Length: 139
Image (tube, rainbow, N blue to C red):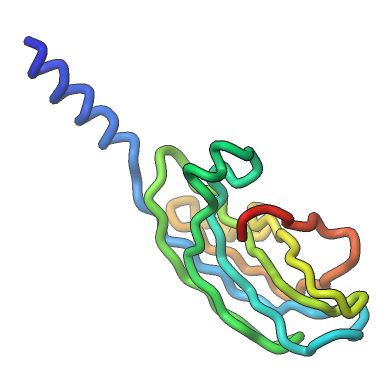
Protein backbone atom coordinates (compact mmCIF):
# COMPACT_ATOMS: atom_id res chain seq x y z
CA UNK A 1 0.00 0.00 0.00
CA UNK A 2 2.84 2.42 0.86
CA UNK A 3 4.52 1.58 -2.44
CA UNK A 4 1.33 2.37 -4.36
CA UNK A 5 0.98 5.68 -2.56
CA UNK A 6 4.59 6.57 -3.43
CA UNK A 7 4.06 5.71 -7.10
CA UNK A 8 0.85 7.75 -7.24
CA UNK A 9 2.51 10.72 -5.52
CA UNK A 10 5.45 10.69 -7.92
CA UNK A 11 3.11 10.34 -10.91
CA UNK A 12 1.08 13.31 -9.68
CA UNK A 13 4.20 15.48 -9.31
CA UNK A 14 5.49 14.48 -12.75
CA UNK A 15 2.09 15.40 -14.18
CA UNK A 16 2.47 18.95 -12.85
CA UNK A 17 5.76 19.50 -14.69
CA UNK A 18 5.47 20.68 -18.27
CA UNK A 19 7.77 21.87 -21.01
CA UNK A 20 7.28 25.23 -22.70
CA UNK A 21 8.98 26.67 -25.77
CA UNK A 22 9.62 30.41 -25.74
CA UNK A 23 10.27 32.59 -28.80
CA UNK A 24 11.03 36.33 -28.67
CA UNK A 25 11.55 38.71 -31.61
CA UNK A 26 12.28 42.40 -31.48
CA UNK A 27 14.61 45.38 -31.59
CA UNK A 28 15.89 47.40 -28.65
CA UNK A 29 16.72 51.08 -29.00
CA UNK A 30 18.49 53.47 -26.68
CA UNK A 31 16.95 56.76 -25.56
CA UNK A 32 20.40 58.36 -25.18
CA UNK A 33 23.46 56.73 -26.78
CA UNK A 34 26.24 57.63 -24.38
CA UNK A 35 27.96 54.30 -23.76
CA UNK A 36 28.82 51.28 -25.87
CA UNK A 37 26.68 50.54 -28.91
CA UNK A 38 26.60 46.83 -28.03
CA UNK A 39 24.23 45.17 -25.56
CA UNK A 40 23.62 41.65 -24.28
CA UNK A 41 20.04 40.39 -24.41
CA UNK A 42 19.20 37.27 -22.41
CA UNK A 43 15.94 35.34 -22.41
CA UNK A 44 15.31 34.39 -18.79
CA UNK A 45 12.66 32.38 -16.96
CA UNK A 46 11.81 33.69 -13.50
CA UNK A 47 12.10 31.28 -10.60
CA UNK A 48 13.07 32.55 -7.15
CA UNK A 49 15.86 35.04 -7.90
CA UNK A 50 14.17 37.85 -5.99
CA UNK A 51 14.21 35.88 -2.74
CA UNK A 52 17.62 35.54 -1.12
CA UNK A 53 17.71 31.92 0.10
CA UNK A 54 15.37 30.52 -2.54
CA UNK A 55 17.31 32.39 -5.21
CA UNK A 56 20.47 30.56 -4.20
CA UNK A 57 18.71 27.20 -4.50
CA UNK A 58 16.75 27.92 -7.68
CA UNK A 59 18.00 31.00 -9.56
CA UNK A 60 16.33 32.22 -12.74
CA UNK A 61 17.03 30.07 -15.80
CA UNK A 62 18.83 31.50 -18.83
CA UNK A 63 17.14 30.07 -21.91
CA UNK A 64 19.09 31.92 -24.63
CA UNK A 65 21.34 34.94 -25.14
CA UNK A 66 22.67 37.14 -27.91
CA UNK A 67 24.73 40.29 -28.38
CA UNK A 68 23.32 42.96 -30.65
CA UNK A 69 23.90 46.57 -31.58
CA UNK A 70 21.27 49.12 -30.57
CA UNK A 71 18.37 48.88 -33.00
CA UNK A 72 19.51 45.56 -34.46
CA UNK A 73 16.84 42.87 -34.82
CA UNK A 74 17.23 39.84 -32.54
CA UNK A 75 15.60 36.45 -32.10
CA UNK A 76 15.80 34.39 -28.92
CA UNK A 77 14.46 30.86 -28.51
CA UNK A 78 14.46 28.61 -25.47
CA UNK A 79 12.76 25.82 -23.59
CA UNK A 80 11.95 25.48 -19.89
CA UNK A 81 10.61 22.68 -17.70
CA UNK A 82 8.49 24.11 -14.89
CA UNK A 83 5.73 23.28 -12.47
CA UNK A 84 2.85 25.42 -13.67
CA UNK A 85 3.25 28.20 -16.21
CA UNK A 86 6.53 29.91 -17.02
CA UNK A 87 7.38 33.60 -16.46
CA UNK A 88 9.80 34.65 -19.20
CA UNK A 89 11.48 38.05 -19.29
CA UNK A 90 14.41 39.71 -21.00
CA UNK A 91 17.51 40.75 -19.07
CA UNK A 92 19.29 43.46 -21.08
CA UNK A 93 22.79 44.58 -20.13
CA UNK A 94 23.53 47.99 -21.65
CA UNK A 95 25.18 51.34 -21.03
CA UNK A 96 23.11 53.60 -23.24
CA UNK A 97 21.52 56.20 -20.93
CA UNK A 98 24.39 57.36 -18.72
CA UNK A 99 27.42 55.41 -19.95
CA UNK A 100 27.32 53.09 -16.91
CA UNK A 101 26.70 49.41 -17.64
CA UNK A 102 23.56 48.06 -15.97
CA UNK A 103 21.12 45.19 -16.42
CA UNK A 104 17.40 45.85 -16.68
CA UNK A 105 14.39 43.53 -16.79
CA UNK A 106 11.79 43.68 -19.54
CA UNK A 107 8.65 41.67 -18.63
CA UNK A 108 7.27 39.92 -21.71
CA UNK A 109 3.66 39.06 -20.86
CA UNK A 110 2.19 42.17 -22.52
CA UNK A 111 4.00 41.30 -25.79
CA UNK A 112 2.60 37.76 -26.04
CA UNK A 113 0.91 36.88 -29.32
CA UNK A 114 -2.59 35.41 -29.34
CA UNK A 115 -1.48 31.77 -29.59
CA UNK A 116 -2.39 30.34 -26.16
CA UNK A 117 -0.41 27.10 -26.50
CA UNK A 118 2.93 28.65 -27.39
CA UNK A 119 4.94 31.38 -25.71
CA UNK A 120 5.58 33.69 -28.67
CA UNK A 121 6.45 37.30 -27.95
CA UNK A 122 6.78 40.15 -30.44
CA UNK A 123 8.64 42.93 -28.66
CA UNK A 124 8.65 45.20 -31.69
CA UNK A 125 10.74 48.37 -31.26
CA UNK A 126 11.48 48.71 -27.55
CA UNK A 127 13.05 51.87 -26.12
CA UNK A 128 15.42 51.53 -23.14
CA UNK A 129 14.60 54.31 -20.70
CA UNK A 130 16.13 55.13 -17.29
CA UNK A 131 12.94 54.11 -15.43
CA UNK A 132 13.16 50.36 -16.20
CA UNK A 133 13.54 47.93 -13.27
CA UNK A 134 17.21 47.32 -12.48
CA UNK A 135 18.26 43.75 -11.84
CA UNK A 136 20.73 43.59 -9.00
CA UNK A 137 20.66 39.91 -8.12
CA UNK A 138 22.57 36.83 -9.33
CA UNK A 139 22.68 37.25 -13.09
